[in-house]
Image (cartoon, rainbow, N blue to C red; front, side, top):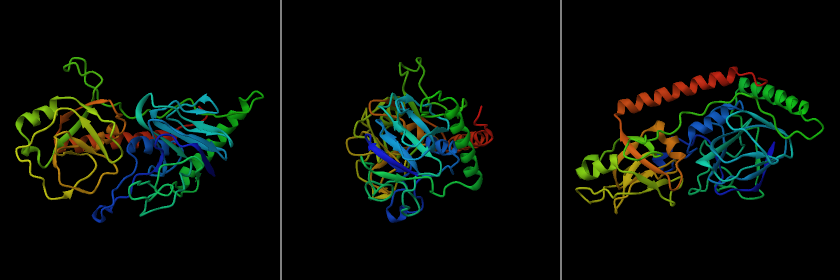
Length: 357
């Protein structure tokens, strides 16, 4: 099976869950910014949760399906359509050969994901199909998609026998439904009535919390150099709002807001950093490292965004307001375990779902 890119959108790339185990060689882990949305998209088409899919950013592409396909769209709301008709998200969808899958600008959120049964068959690079644009590896020639690109898909090998059987059954059932309801016109898609409820929405400050309603709250644990910052800076970091800057990307989310002053301005020796690290460079405005972040850095680290909230950060767009709240390491671990428990329950519910309902 193949997908042809008609228009590429703002920044559309192939992503899976990344390439762990190579950071000691200076190679970022990468992978989907919103791993939860990617995993659910794959669940909905019978794939392994880490199969390669498309990550769309702010303004989506136009794609032509060259064969009948089972697909799913999750994440940010980008007004997806099939041949001009609105397409539901968070559920498996059958669409016919020749159909055009198109997206608009994100009305909410920042990144959407498109999974197809069998996955996107980009070539493996160091064990992953994820696009790393700085290293020029993964995806399609290590770059964002361009008009005219042709994506092989459906034979990525990321689904087990049960997943492939489930996808085949759903594809047949939905194709039959589309044909039965066509009433003389060409069917353009079919989907079940049920949907996979997306994970809990980003934490939002209440109207009573100092007038910060609509602000996304990210939970953090203190960083290694937390004590190097002046008390006023530590207080401001946890109380003040920061705005996502336009210069943000998959490497880091830059923040505009109160500068944070350290007691010692000396730069550290380069040391290991990971996604979620909140660095404070010269000038004092924080940067939250993201999926494609470098593997080492010398800036002081005031905090780390907890793993469970990284998908929330992925959906923050330029101009959005965020604030931070401190949790303990034990609380961060419990939150992540609770999130994984919810994902396992969702995966079981999807496996048991009858697509004809």
